[in-house]
Image 1 (cartoon, rainbow, N blue to C red):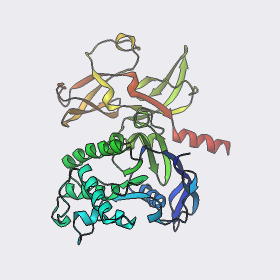
Image 2 (cartoon, rainbow, N blue to C red; image 1 turned 135 degrees about the horizontal axis):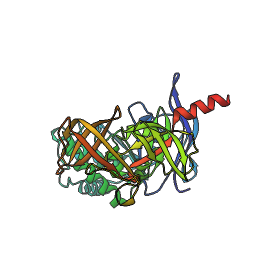
Image 3 (tube, rainbow, N blue to C red; image 1 turned 180 degrees about the vertical axis):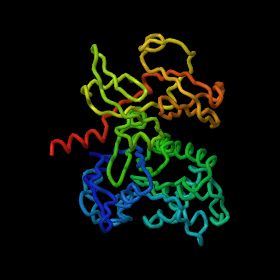
Image 4 (cartoon, rainbow, N blue to C red; image 1 turned 45 degrees about the vertical axis):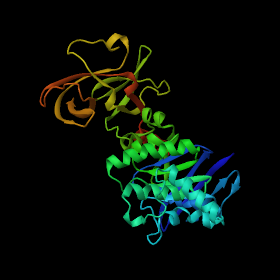
Length: 371
């Protein structure tokens, strides 16, 4: 295929498997986010692709050709790190032009490339500035310009916004996305922040303990996490154990909250499952009877519980309620008035906000039984 292919790559440090059998493809012009908690293997995987580390097993290919043994500077990849790694004794132009000079470009070509890259990141005219006098956001732009100046076939960014404050990070995230799209730049973006990954990436790979926990398009992964780890990592904390029941041609999961509709027809009766209730899928309703099919026959789930905490989160209000000895969190538009703490909240969860997945514990028990 055209682009990058990571083939069952593994890397251990002592007895610790930092990357364990990871495999994926990255097409040209595609942006991939490697997402996961600290220690999940994201940076090690990036270092392996860049050639800064050698794998213990597997292969890394570009356009079908193995890159193993090829030095970092000959892979044609651009790198940008969280600490920017700017040369403190060089000015902006010398920093941005470093990769171009390494390519053997002429002085005129270097100057033209520096000017082009600085204009791209909004720093036209900064060539003679001392990098030590720049703000954090300006240094981040210089680092990005330096990575882009040699026109890399693959750009790799390792937590590039992690050192910035929230307001600046959000602004630069929008700018970075626009730059990558404008250049049709193939890129791998490493982060532990799911909002950054969702905003930038065409696809995401979630890593856990050096292995792929789930891969797919951001909206698909968020709507249908593969397991409890992925759900909770993405901020979906409302996860309940349940057991599938089939009755009158209708599948439900029996949980502490009662019966929850199941849309996954492949789940057999008696299967152990985990039910995810997305916090943004709740709608306030008036108390009173409601059929099992929900408002207007749409399906879904009616809930009521006592509010134990609530907080203002900018454009959203967060309410924590207790129902059937289970604590659940839901979010509502900031302009929507909620009952006070201690009062009962009545809500309806839309069908799209309910996801039922096989239980990892149940799968482990079945494997043990077979053994």
